[in-house]
Image 1 (cartoon, rainbow, N blue to C red):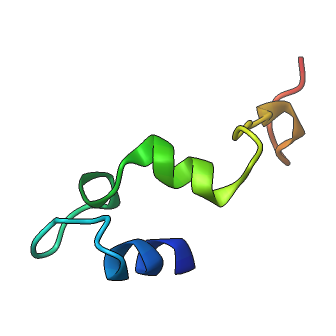
Image 2: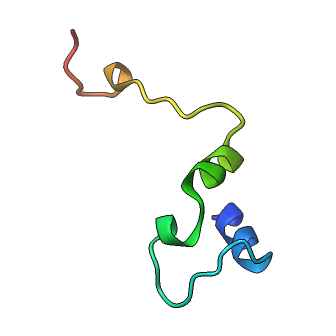
Length: 52
């Protein structure tokens, strides 16, 4: 949330009106700012996921 507000205030978003986050920000740049590590999801560790 803070990253999105910072981008809105510093001019990195030029969207007008109500838009989806993907329209307001560069997705790769936004996600990279959230974590220095690449995002990884391991579904085998999610509760209730089938094991195999």
